[in-house]
Amino acid sequence: MTKLIDVWGMNAEVQWVIFIILGILVFSSTAWYILGKVRPSKLATELQVRTKSWWIMCACFILSTVVHPVITHLGLAFLSYALLREMYPLLKLDLRERNVVLLCYAVVPVQYALAYYGKTEIFLAFIPVFMFVIIPFVLVTRGETQGIVRSISLLPYSLVAWVYGMSHLALLFQMPEIPGFTAGPEGLLLYLIFLVGMNDVLQFAWGKTIGKHPVLPRVSPNKTWEGLIGGVLSTTLLAIGLRFLTPLGIWEAAFTGFCVAVAGFMGDAIASGIKRDVGVKNSGNAIPGHGGYLDRLDGFSAAAAPFFHLIYFFSSAS
Image (cartoon, rainbow, N blue to C red; front, side):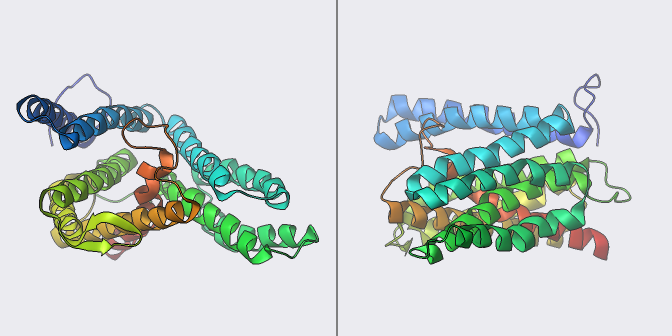
């Protein structure tokens, strides 16, 4: 593949996907602006606000990806910290739980340091094996047993979902060298970011356009079967079209794209259930038009680990 701009140090595949992302954003911004002028509506306004926010998010993701691996790891670690920091206040933790939260925060830099230094075996075991036992034990040593089951469920899960899952994005930089694969970890990271982001947009668009039958009416009434199926199929096609960023063949890319789309939906549905239980619509207001970090990154937390292991499996099998 030929570079679009020779003076850029990044490889050709990464250049192409950045231009594709920018092209989609320009097209979307123009389309929603025209729609708002021709047929003003709440939907048109919402699409305009969401697109503006995606400009900011994509710029942050792209810059943190292509500048330097250290910046990438620090940026991803910040997102995991932000997810925890946003979610814990919503859970109305008691004093015993708030003290253990400090330990949960301390896990974030350790997990990402393990990813950065390539300690893959410990990385994969640190949270689901060691912290899964240590955090409940620390809670028990506080001497209060009332509500202990809730605490033991909430805090380890928060680490698995928003630190362990998200940190697999950083672990992509430790993938073994694959013969003939030139896009590198930056290409894989942008590939996943693009698929999860577009899956979210496409499921929203299909659902708003033709959606009639709710998937989970008591959890998230706005999510429909039409939106889910349309988003999953569209994302699968995108995964095939952008497979030049990966070492995958056509069917491998299709299966990976399908799994990423379904996992993204699952992560979104889980987050919706949590928010409905605590009585909030959005987890925060950090991202205009999108709510908080959890509202937009729930798909990444669920899709990142399956994506990493699928890439690793298909690369090892070939």
